[in-house]
Every structure is written in C-alpha cells, then in structure tokens.
Amino acid sequence: LLPASRQRFAPKMTSLVIFSCIYMQSKGNNISEFLFPSPKVVRCRIFSGDLRAHCKEIQRPTMAIEENVNCSAFIEKQSYITEALSKEEQDFPLAYIITVHKDFETFSILFRNIYMPQNIYCIHVDVKSSESFKKSMQRLAGCFDNVFLASRSETVVYAGFSRLKADINCMRDLATRPTPWKYVLNLCGQDFPLRTNQEIVRILKNKWRGKNITPGIFQPPHMKWRTQYVYKEVVDKDKKQMIRTNVAKGPPPHGINLCFGTAYYAVTREFVQYVLDDKKAQDLLEWSQETFSPDEHYFVTLNSLPDAPGANTVPSWEGNTRAVKWRDGEKTHKGCKGHYVRDICVYGEGDLEWLTKRSDLFANKFEMQRYPLVLECLEHWARQRTLNESEVRIQPSWRI
Image 1 (cartoon, rainbow, N blue to C red):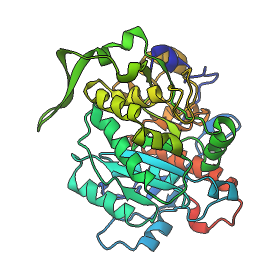
Image 2 (tube, rainbow, N blue to C red; image 1 turned 90 degrees about the horizontal axis):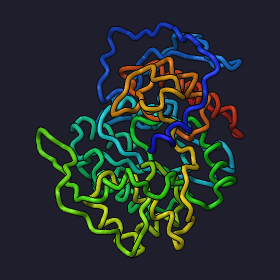
Image 3 (tube, helix red, strand yellow; image 1 turned 30 degrees about the horizontal axis):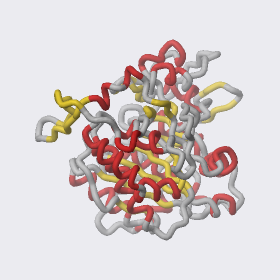
C-alpha cells in the first residue's frame, strides 16, 4: 500500500487501556502442527467501549488430525458451525481462497471462524510446506464436503508471480464447483475475520451490489520500478527470493494502464470467469510473470478495464478488506504492541482494542504460538457476535 493509504486504516486512539491477564496451559500439552488450539483457552469480554480482561479457564479438547480421524467428533469438539445461520446467508454463499505454508494452529483458528456449511473453501498449500503440515491440511479438508486443496500447488516466493498463480489455481478450481458462490475473497493463514459472515454478506449485497472490491489506484511514479525491469524468482535450498535483472520490461499488453493496490480482494464469480477466459486478462497474466509482486497490480488493473464484470474504471482505495498496522503509520495507529515482520505488525495483546473497533473485513497478521491471548480473545468475541445474529437454534457445540 502507499504510505498515505496506510494511514487511512488507522483511526485516532482516544484512550489507553492496559490489558492484563494470566494465560495458563497444561504442562502435558506439546503444541505441534497437528494440534488445534491449546486445552486452556482464555475467555475475554469487551464492553462499555473499553477492553477489560475477564479471564476464565475453560477446557477445550485438543485433537490431533490423525490418519483415521473421526470427522463427526472432530467437527463437534472443535466448535464448527454446521448449519447456515440465516436464509440470507444460505442464499448468498461465499467462496474463499486461503494460501498457507506453515503454522497449522494459527490457520485452524482462522478457518474455524470463517467456516460456514453453505460456503466453499479452496486451500492452497505451498509446495515447500513440511510433510506433516501437508498431511494435516489434507485430513482437515477431508472432513468437509465444501473444503478442498488446490489441484495444483506452487512453490510460493515472497513478492513473486507464484503468489499470484496460487490464487489463479484456486479460482480455476472454484469455477468448476457446483456451489453457486457469489463472491470470492482471498486470505492468508495469518488473517482473522473482524466481521461476521452475515455482515460480510450484507456488505457485499447492499453496498457493493455486484461490484468488485480491489483497493488501489493507477500506478504512481514511485511504484513503476516494480514493472520496469524483468524480475526472476530464485528458488533453491537456501534462498527463495526475487532478483531484479538489468533487462528492461516492455509495456503491458493491449495498452493497459497499470494500477497498484493491495493483494486482497472480494470479486464476483463473473469477474473470476473473466480472469480465466478473457484474452486481455490472460495476456496481462503472462506479462506479469516477470514483475515484482504482481498480485498487487493484476486484479486491481483488470478491475479498472471497462469490459470487466463489476469493474471500477476509476480505481480507489475504497474497500476495507484488511486492518493492517504498517510500521510507517505509527503516528496514526500508535504503534504495534507485538512485533513487526516486513514492516507489518504481528498483533500483541495491546492491539486488541484497536482491532475490535475496526470496520475492516479481516485483520492481518497473527501468530498463535507467540501471542495466544490475541487470537483466543478475538475468537470468543467473534463467535459471540456470530451466534447473536443466528436465526436458527444454536447448538451447544457451536459455542467457544
């Protein structure tokens, strides 16, 4: 994102709240990629505009994704919601593309909080993921009829074409599925929803009404370096990175005016079909193979073309897809209470109040093992809000 755009994601803080509680975990629990969240879960309540800690130890069963997993027991014990909570949500199924490569525990909390039986989920597992992680993902997907792994996996390089290709692979798979999904949203394994499924459905139906959400603008001069030279992905045992060559890159095909934006989107099924079938879309995809971070220009550029379904020919940063604390935005968001990775905040406990006041669909980024309270408190907060909207009888197992 542009520095100016990052500032719009961070409203002024009007109060400072100290968050403190004790996190306890049974000594016998060894967290591994195979395990879902720890046996001791902290329950937190947010009220009266302030964040206060009301900590209570509750027993959450821990369950390994074993080869012969009992899926019914697994789904119940892990508090998955197994029924559409309203007719409105049933009639407006969503599709999700989730790219993952590690940290099964963090992913499991994200997935449990976006899962709805009427939706459909494509999970792209990085080729370079550990075998234990891959097996965990396979077993998880095998427990749900509406969850599958991408039919083709990429070795994803940060800022490389492989990251964009992972999304395209899932789009191709989703286009062949019978589920009549309306929009597809993309996530990574370290995201978490700040809106309920019903809220997301209503935002897409009532505000966007068939338009795509691809936040971004026409490519500014200081971002042209990304597409002026040929970039190559370097993948070997010790190094996986993008390297700039001295070879000049030709202009985009069809006289397309490039845009620059975020890698996150919510786009219609018709737009996905356009991405897969249209010649301009395919030519731009091929041209983008040797650029830097093409996932941050490809979809927003296509969405600016007049013939794209749901297009926005005057691109803008409108569309709060992600709450992100960037390092260069500290004057507005008052800093990261966790730590920064590639200038993006990995949220700590002190960021909870900021997160719960955001209007964005999702937040990034989280680490369960480093900051367990953050996700456990957010999960409880999110599940309570979700169940409060339910128009069907709430099953006891759905409660966190």
